[in-house]
Image (cartoon, rainbow, N blue to C red; front, side, top):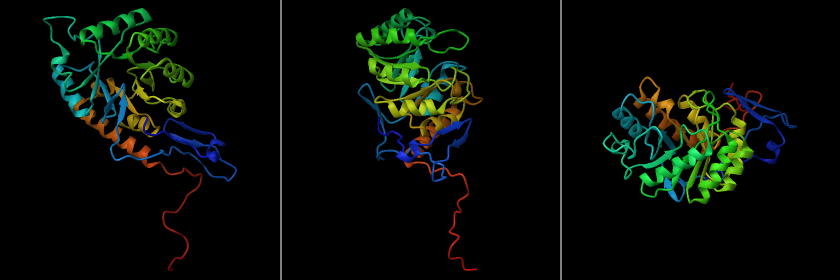
Length: 302
């Protein structure tokens, strides 16, 4: 990862917390509020790397729920995304010859195609889906693994996810893994060899935004691989918050496809990702309990 948030020793002794957009911080012994997510460095060319490939755009997008293929294509273009994820079990990428192929609208020479295992509720099905995608994409090893627990919540089945991860990594796949916002589970998946860990912000397709910012922050702080928020983003401000927390990127689908104007929303998400990343690199001001005048109170003329 390019940068990680870190805290001063003083701020580590306080208890920062964010709830539904309201910043709440414990008071330290000096009676000041402290919250630090300062970057370790700022680079002119801000990019990130997944499985040995470097990308300039930190926004990853899906291809489902659009009114038609043309709307999807225009939204993807407006998003500026370089990585596009495709549900192999729901989308034709060559397994149905003679039918429209999404790769005609999203050519692999232009985009990194990220096949995903959406709709898989057990490890065996997810593994089989990844293997099918690799065959259809001529030996392509990158995949997005998600093993779901039930149809109502679409929360990940973390036990089955661990099982599938072990098999896929051993089989040479570069696994980007969807998981819950548990820092322990995220670290375990990293240790198993995932090239990126993708904790949810909220249930898939809910649009609720990041429900547990502190857990996401902890995952980012502990990670040595890219962390990308996946699922639950509803609007541009949600994407900006994820980036301000130090995430390397955000993957989204419904937030764009279900908007009144998906193409316009895709552009908004692109700007939000960029703004949130720049805010993270710049380092937010220290939050304080009381007011602090913008102009000095000393040395007034009258």
